[in-house]
Length: 126
Image 1 (cartoon, rainbow, N blue to C red):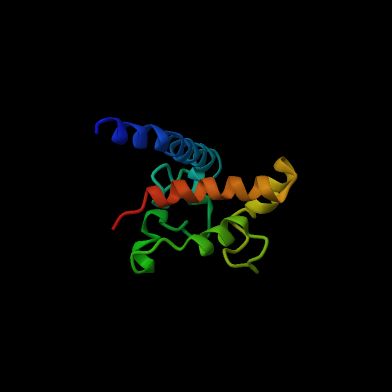
Image 2 (cartoon, one colour):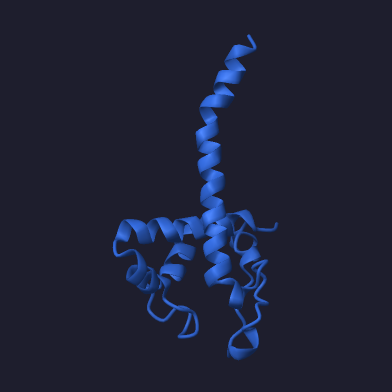
């Protein structure tokens, strides 16, 4: 009987590791690209905030302000920025374009934005 739970745990390990790795990649991308404005904890208090005309959004409140549900599609569109007509003004970079210059294909851009979203979902407060 002890073998079955162990087998289940071992079979789930790659998925758990992949999720943790993806979250870590998203956090790394967030820290390198977003934290300067949104802050290291996502509260809109990054070191560049004084240079902006509008305070960056507190990203830890996305779920709370959406009735407890993380607004994944809306967040994706805001980060990507290519499909959203001037939603966040000119101050926030259009990351879809910037990632396109680096990655070169839509699949890689989607993966990169999705990794950031996984990280953002992990920092939500209720």
